[in-house]
Length: 109
Length: 117
Image (cartoon, rainbow over all chains, first blue to last red):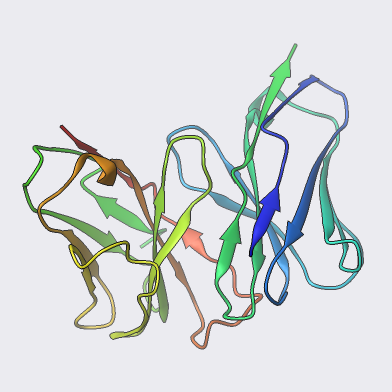
């Protein structure tokens, strides 16, 4: 079967760092996406990883370990506008996106 | 256009009614996807078009769901005889390349929130 696990909710403080984990078991693997989704809005692209390692993009970084079926999204210097849901999605052998349920991140001042 | 647009943004239907949801993808984008997103869940794949061809409809939950993209741009998702379990946000996404290139970023519209009473 196909399974993507993320924590349901996380809370962090403005200015701090938070790491959102994602573990996956999918039929085939052709990469992993992270998307941000504010309530009532469209998911917006954050990152795509297909090779092991860390990809840094400004305040956001994404890490992938294919052997462990594991990824994380690291957000630094948190801002109030980072309060959103963060969705992890893998690309399976049929090139379909398989989505996690998302992690709701709450930023407190 | 600047991004993917969808209409209507909100739709309330009585059980048994037919509804039609529209998606305008980014101009020139080859691939178009429809997803269903329940509250507090990630999107679930419904169907995929490459230009006007519907190449994958494996995610459509029943034969009450029908999608088309006759000219390879605008797409319509139609739900016949709506049921309460159809209540969800319906998201449309487009990407620039065909062939379901794994790294090809999908750009999402704001969705249509369908409520079936």
